[in-house]
Length: 151
Length: 143
Image (cartoon, rainbow over all chains, first blue to last red; front, side, top):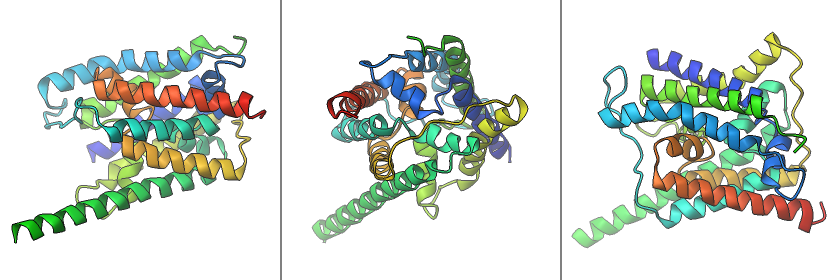
């Protein structure tokens, strides 16, 4: 139950942050991404502000290996680099640069009544499901192969 | 730089960092939106934990609505991309973030705050690609 409340509060603060920084607006984001236009460096300050504030919390949890409630925390690996990481990030960047939406702002924009965002969100969910499905098939195939080689 | 809004950017950014700090300190979870949403795509997976994910998303959508209700005067967003472009971009964002294991929030904020070389690589990759694509769309393509 605590976790639900924590997540709700965290989500609210995130949504308010996107609104105040105006990152919820794809036009604002494209103003940053397009350095050849009337360049707007705001996004850099948003990221810098967020990283500086989040840093102590991550440092604390990473050091101890548990959260404030003393529950063990397993964070994603920081190393090594691999082709999935880079290829995925390049594919994501291409989509981001086309419209100016990344997942957070696309969802948050619904709160400002942007019904058109649902088209982007629906496509994004399909894309996510496609990767999930592919992962499962690969896992199933390698499991079959492992059984076959053992047999 | 007539569109530059340093005050709102820093304050809003600080709130996003606070959100990530709250979620990490009190639940040990990473405030990466693509990861939170991606975990809901296959809800029957063991350990899917849909409860907190849905609660976070409710807040994410409720936050802007709340600001608008209390403070008022929040300008609507400008989303002038065509339907086809939005579908294409949405597919790329969905596939890319799951393949790369994160987006602007997960890699760009949380991973950078952890000084993770993987997240730094991801952030440089998606920022550079997005800048290139935005340039091509707006200038080279004549749009």
